[in-house]
Image 1: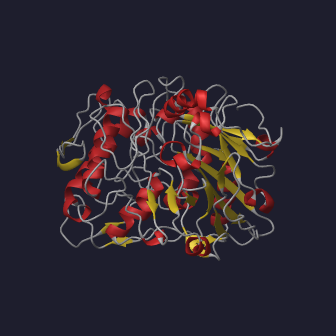
Image 2: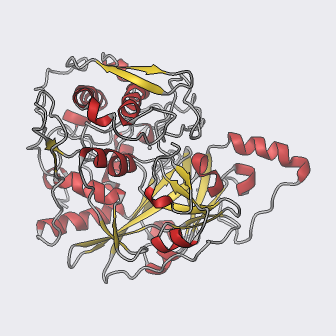
Image 3: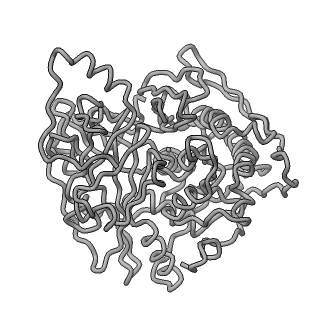
Length: 509
């Protein structure tokens, strides 16, 4: 999922040395690169083309004024340098009316969208995205709804669809951001508290991501699973994949968000939400079939997301299918969501599970210090078990680095030919899906400071003159983090782990 900008492949590295690169520009040779995904496709029928180009102050209800001509150059420079934004959360966001009320993107500290660059026309750099996943606790049925984000001072191209929610309904809302820090601002004084919104700790926000009501949603979903109301489907098996040490055609279980096969430096972050943008007016609309057909020349905006990478790029290449539910904004057409991906991975959690580690920048305090309490705040909003001796066996800072290297490197090496047939989410990172993932792993090693645990970067990437990875080599030698005992090398599937019910917090939920 800092004081500097993030690159087009979403991620943030160390806050003091970041540089945002917009698609399709090449990524410079810098260690402080981010690895997130941003795709902007301009087309009248964009839906079939996803190859990207390859606690501020209470808001004002009035539209923001544009800077005067005399100050326009200064404002433009300030906007280009800015990396943080506010998002105004509507009143009663967990209700049908609240979901259908647009969220508003604007600058921090009283800055206008123009002064700050916090505009959806600038989504590659500072776009905000919101996603709701809804549970009917009586039946276990799940639904998805993507609330709309608009730039302050604009109106939607088409009013958002008002969803018909089950009664009762338990809603979780996930936020994603293509900048550095997104600050939640309630439309009313009680909005955030009433909706159980969480954005890190006082003085130390998560950054790109934040949440509302996630704990209640996952507790209820896990309860429905125990009662047999909610049955999460199998993750499926890919006959195309080669297990580590296996033979062609033997296949393996499809990867999930908690698989070390596909994680990076900040797992389980950002959303799969898509919006339509009218570049001429700066207005946005929900990405529905009807809107896509009727809004000509629209741009498709996506949030930088591990989930988008998995659901829309990795899964199709491997012959896998994400967990989907009816989209209440789009005539119940099936769609994925961040929360659905977490439910799938929780139900089939691997023995060696990649949970949010304490060296993930989003849960660091002061950009440097590990903090179990902040990590737990994040984890519980994603239905993950807290930091303890058990989860530290796979997801302590050292062990997360070790398993990311020891599991993902052989996976990429074994499936190099297959992954090389896939499109890269961002052409400025790699020229195909394999080189993209190799470069992402290469940068994640540095951004997590894995070298501090006696580990060696297992990936060597070859870059062209524009800084794009065009080839990669992998050292699959098993490594052990310093100061740890030698663990058993995982098998090709890494299953038979403890279920999320056993690993969840002491409440038993």
